[in-house]
Length: 252
Image (cartoon, rainbow, N blue to C red; front, side):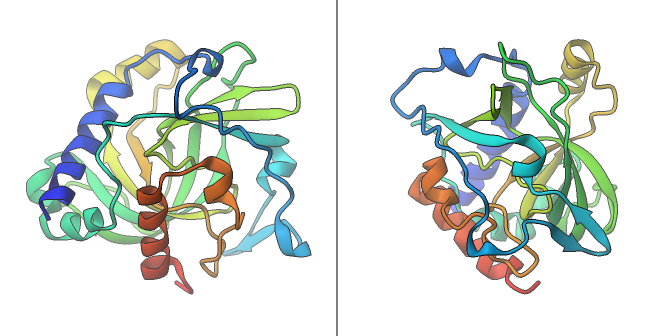
């Protein structure tokens, strides 16, 4: 329980601090845990890569964005990811966080890469639909069925054949259109809103997102069955993801 409490507090602190950092060039982030950068192939099993849900049609991410590569930045002093965080939040979320916050099941509707360039990485606005609210505090203003554009905790950089996604080793990128996730959502701080308004003309930023699971289809199956290996997610991130997928996303 204490581990989960520490994890929640550190998550909130990490978001508020790192949200105000300059966008960076992944080429300059050489380090011990970096450069997993492997190519993601077409979805396996030979099925149509179009995901259909709730009357909407999504292009596959590969069709839309070309080749996606992942680069991981080592963050050895981070607090381990744990499914206990969700349990703790459901019991103590209101007391621990006075700003808007919730744990939700969402579907990714759009990933806006308009700011991405060859030279530098950039945060991308990700539009999601809230399919189900697992738990929220009293100030959380969104409802099930709402769509909202969120800031996630990684950077995208344009390449000759697609995009490279750079992320810290405790973070799961939102990179699959039509993918479903368990997502921790928190209201953006005023200084975060001001930074993104000034640097990216992002004037409507209201929420920050932390994905707790890898991307799954409507039946709770991984869209890319080899995603854990291709991204190099640490064991704790994978275990947290698998636990929450089994609990909340399998045949939801």
